[in-house]
Length: 351
Ligand code: T4K
Image 1 (cartoon, rainbow, N blue to C red):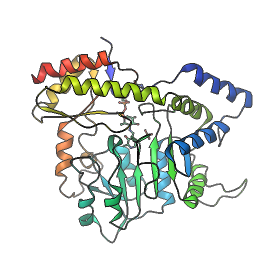
Image 2 (cartoon, rainbow, N blue to C red):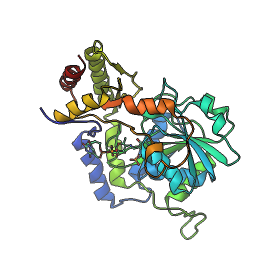
Image 3 (cartoon, rainbow, N blue to C red):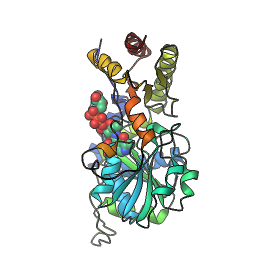
Image 4 (cartoon, rainbow, N blue to C red):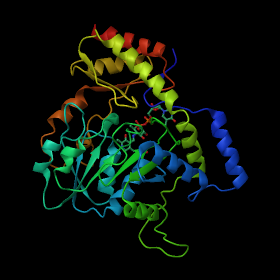
């Protein structure tokens, strides 16, 4: 049996990609806001229904630019149950990530637990649309604080792209659609978008004028070519994800000690909650058979070395999620037949 991974790239049609590459050679235009980057931004803008899309080299740097553009300071409230980059971008900017517990239903930041974490140093909330499930943005709005979102998992999910001040998507190789590496910031605020464009390109506002301290966060043409080719594969990826989810739901329905969490709209992640006593055993059994299931996002950012010494509020739901979560393979590299193999392995442990 071939190895099965969580995060195997969804490869688009190579011929479509190569056609875009031909164009790059003809124009001899490789980066710096090239025509393919502009086309990619336009297509993403149309798809998400948002006024401004700023393509960047990856989502992490997109979040870093966002923090600068929003002029944040002091503390930012953020979930701990997320990829470590969400916390790191705050710490790298000299801000304190204040970890908040999550809602047991969505596993996104719990708006009811935000109020008690607000101090006179709080400058924003950074929500994460975890596994493609949108945050409760209405609940978060009640805080009165600026809100921005890590939407790395949420491309093509309904209700995202235009929330809060801005949202940041990832087009990393392992994501629903990919640019090898890439990301995009989306916002309906034109002024913010203009500043983000400056920050993406060293702070240049004209040929010789620099208005702010920017960096190099540009997406190159070859990355945009992959993005455009991937966009043309979107329906195919979605169809396979749907089929795989259906198969998992069918084959796991009578297996005890687990719960298959509801899918998000892009179905990029297959997320299981496994009884705490058995999660490690299931994971080890799968790895032994080359099914590389992942405990995303164990053990939680608050337990990572740079943050573990800080005092944290109770993160009870987060702790439970970290102890039970197990992500399973899906995407174009996984067939319903592979799903059946994975489910058999899980049943061998839990039956
Ligand atoms: N916010 C959130 C909530 C995120 O999840 C992420 C990234 C970010 C922000 C930051 O976005 P970017 O700055 O990356 O745009 C992977 C990805 O590297 C990371 O992008 C992603 N989240 C995270 C959830 O997953 P790792 O450390 O688990 O990756 P790795 O190298 O173990 O790859 C996963 C599996 O994918 C491997 O077992 C094999 C397979 N794979 C991977 C690559 C890169 C392939 O088969 N081919 C490949 O080319 O973080």
